[in-house]
Length: 488
Image (cartoon, rainbow, N blue to C red; front, side, top):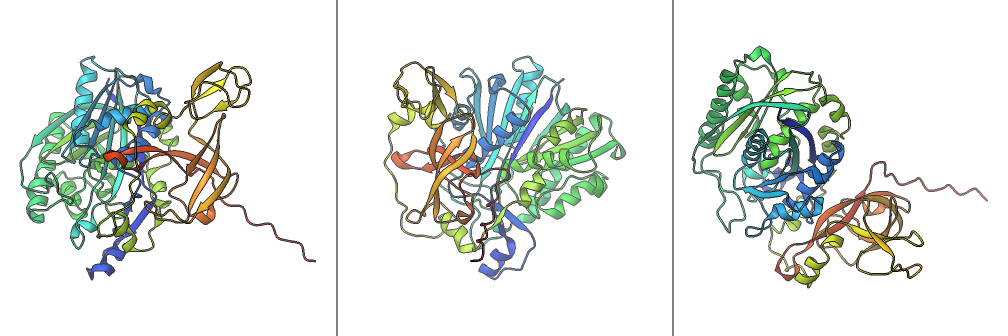
């Protein structure tokens, strides 16, 4: 059996109301919100966050992964494999196959078909698929009402999973739009009616009907359908063409999340797994994706699904925890969509980035064999406490608490919220380090605050992407109420 073994989603911390966009450009007011990533995030960092969740909630050792596919229309590098960076941060084996699948919102399901075929042929046992996008909509365009950011990850496996993949089908269809040429900053559009009716709707209905006929399914036997959403009305038209009822559809996420590109179809599928009423073993699920054609899959839920869903913070809850951006102009400024002074670019060293990859990307420190002190980073040959050179390298935990902090009022570039907390972190299990905090309200930071480490873009010094770790508020973080002084 080939099936989906685990999944993960990443929802950035911020949201932008469509009402805010409407007020800025005097557009007709539209309901809902768009999920917006921070300036220090890109498709790699968001994809890594989703991948970590998939591996950890699925109790999967990264060394079990035989292949990694990174799927995006917005790769940070156009010549340099992005998947190799992700594999390094996740600490996958060095003989793990890595590949970028790009240029189409259908990239994720292209990878899913490749994973299914490789596992069926016995060439792999576990394949990790990461789909992530950070697309830029042209200001003063209707794309601004659609595009959002986010990521999702699936582990496809020959082992017992949460959903069996019984089969798939595909169609390809060449249409002028939407498109983005090399050097373009924004996606361009042909004619929305043509793209909707001939590019999206016709192809996704065609491929889904093909799967239904191939496996002799009927509308009554389909428990849930989850497929890419071009926009809300066409999502319903697809269902009508398949004779499906609204109660059989997964939430298309368009209203309160938006169109997250390659990640969207996986996010909708994951929402279908988490949706009430819960799927039961052997319930039939239709899944499809769109982009210059369409891919469709016939899935069946297994008895493992409920336990795996329970281990997650559900997608709907993540969407509910986002922070509202105060101003639309903040969004424009930090996306560099308005011309401003060039941001300060730090110097960087290719040699140090390569030499210290285990420290910068993988969070390796060491433990002193003599006194037991755990130290970070792993760049010294002796213990700072006792001076012993008897040390053992070890991978550090990605969570801890704040030992102390200060608020930096001088730095602002790359942060929606200022001042920026500079935190001394005590990691769970040992190790102390200094990190910037991101995705937070600076006034809510406190000593003893639980934090999680997050992989982010630091700067582009040296002409390349410099990534490393920051911290974000952890689960249950809540600033204590100040003690009330007794009356004199």
